[in-house]
Image (cartoon, rainbow, N blue to C red; front, side, top):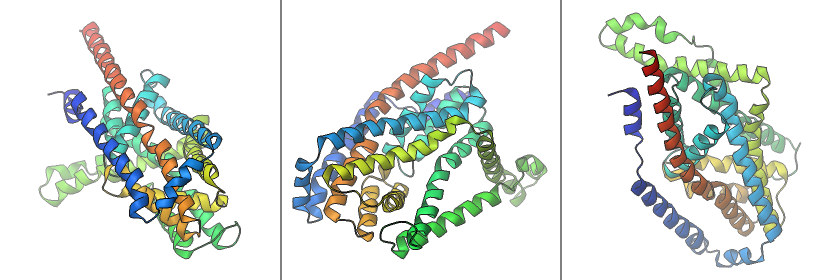
Length: 355
């Protein structure tokens, strides 16, 4: 069986599975959005939806489109150098939107989206090691603004540089964790990118030697990915602004959702509570459903933001940034399948022409 067939078999989503997953998500949507206020004892909170400003709700929708555009631009900026002849803007849109939908269906922390993305890149003809290196580079560049914002807003709020409440657990603790993770990434970058090749001789040995040779793949790919991310930053590729836009537009959607029902919290509080709440994506449930909502609402409560206002604002925010991508994402997935079939035909034609 070829590599392409193995990858395809491992990611074989048929129409029935997609419909089943969509049905599950629809049921989860109903349970979350209609039962949460009652379970939390906030019966009157849900009525605030009726008093929301349509103007701000429409703005939140428009800002959500900017989030999609930033993510596609970021993907294109990272991967076009490696596979520019096949991954253009249409293909970048199909892969990223399908991956966004998959990350919302499968747990945890967007793992489903990464699997689908890797599968698509492999079908485009990219080597396994290059897929691994570029995926890590993509993740580093995407989450670098996340870590930077948590550090800046966290310490800034605690030191009084920014307006707003500054609970220790919501400011200093996340900031310190972000700094530690950034330090770990810096240490991984020091690992030789050819570590796997250097330990190749261990494969001839049994036991721990062979295991060490296999385990060397992860740190080597991590180092290569982090170094590639640094190279992208040094090149000042305008497409890399997509990473900042991806997060900035999400925060703007949350801000517009608050404004639709009342006053938004101070900007630094909004940013810090947003990123702390997003850690709910790491929970082993589809897309962090409930975890992100609970995390954000809890974070805003810790910052002394009105709980009823936070509930409706966060639910509207999630409706746009979490549920909305499912529709274009599923459509993009089926378009991506057609694109993959085209790539296979082109690859077959190339092989025949060389024969």
